[in-house]
Length: 276
Image 1 (cartoon, one colour):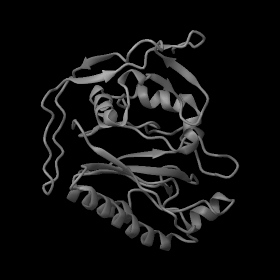
Image 2 (cartoon, rainbow, N blue to C red):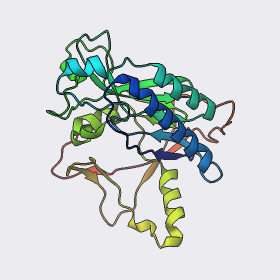
Image 3 (cartoon, rainbow, N blue to C red):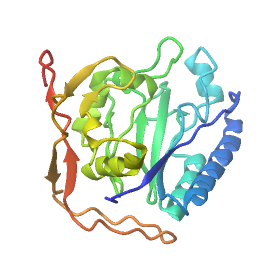
């Protein structure tokens, strides 16, 4: 796991495509954004993770699944993920793609809203949105399929840490985020917190203003927090095996100098909340 890297949230504003033949133009533009972001920031920041919005490749413009499958759906992986894979290999970066409308022969008749994590080795995981936004989204949730044979909440061990993802409406459901965390997605590291304090110290930021809390994005759900008067606590976590080296030939990366990682506690559950 690298000690410090930067993540880029890349925004797009594409017209809704009417057919899958238009996806390639969007992929070429997003590939250019990836290269421009990495090379443009390289003198200042080491951008290693790039993320793109939901529906960056295709939008569910039809009300029926059959129409979406006929005009816009694609299998994943595909020629578009191959483009991202080449970039990830060349720059040694990780790309969380915008979502595809995906078809899979293993699940006839289904249509998934799928984002792909791609690293220097290629496709690392596919996440299919669990909580579709009914009625506007008519996609299949993996939970709709009794014979779904894959992990619905994939977490991948990468050079950057253990990465998981959820899509938009998923964040309103505590079970989704909880399961991603239980599957091993990384908590906040001590070095991240210390780096934040150092970066904003000259702006007047005080370390005692930090308040560790675990909540749920886009939801008014409070899970746990420390006492206001207490400082965030940390502990050292040592992985059971060394991280694999996943370095680009063109952008060699330094390995961690220590096998221990300082993690920040999100404190205890609220008095009225139970931990399951």
